[in-house]
Length: 126
Image 1: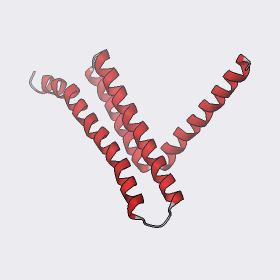
Image 2: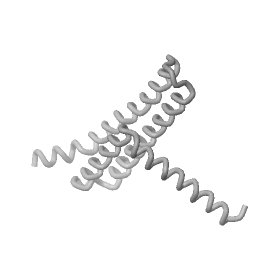
Image 3: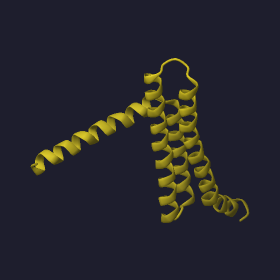
């Protein structure tokens, strides 16, 4: 395969991925909430001048939540496509996917507290 063809296909694939991310942000309320929280946390990071390590951990946490939220949305769409009517097993699958997002979100909240509580304490008690 020629290098030009390989690169063209990779760029085309990136275009599809970007389109999917935009669609997710435009159509899914849950990802919109996560994106808003990500913006707030980014502003907080600049305000408190967090360390490079804290930035990396925060960015990874945001990326994990947003990515998993997208996978949850995809799993729900596939489940609804396969079985549009209520089915207990489909409900179980959706609950598990949502639970994975929940676990990641709780972990991110804990990480946020670990990062920001010392900064907030320093501001309040200085």
